[in-house]
Image (cartoon, rainbow over all chains, first blue to last red; front, side):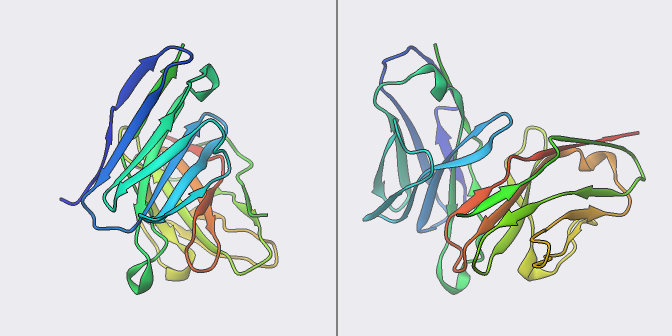
Length: 115
Length: 109
């Protein structure tokens, strides 16, 4: 089954450490997204990419960076993690063009705890 | 700016009761609206979108541009409907989605 896979699924780290969350997809979709989910705040967009050469900031990009290594891979980095970046992070994909419908396909999430 | 408001954090009903999860949006253009659902231990997934005018699992949602609302309704709730529901808005052309804060629906027997 075509899928969206996130690694790691759980990570505990300390303040100041560099962390990378990885996302890979076998759906063949061109668009990829990183969201974070916080209780009471819902999902907020961190970064999104419409193709390998197109990276865009979302509403809460400060403290994060991304890399689109290939159409199928989209990584999120926290250069120096801080406790308020503790959250559940979701990668998602979608497809453009006439086959696109706006539907996002989500990974299972990566739970990050920053101590 | 795009904004989606879900005023209820928790909605608790009994099985068989009608359900309405509220969603209001602000956007000056032509919105595309969606409802996403996250069941326990499952991925967030699309439930329905307004352009399809479809009923999924007994749920419907009508876009009311006058009231800028896209409320999700079901006449008779089932226990398996218990989940987290997110309303989301995209600008025309299905660009990035903006999500509401979510409503947890709890259906009790």
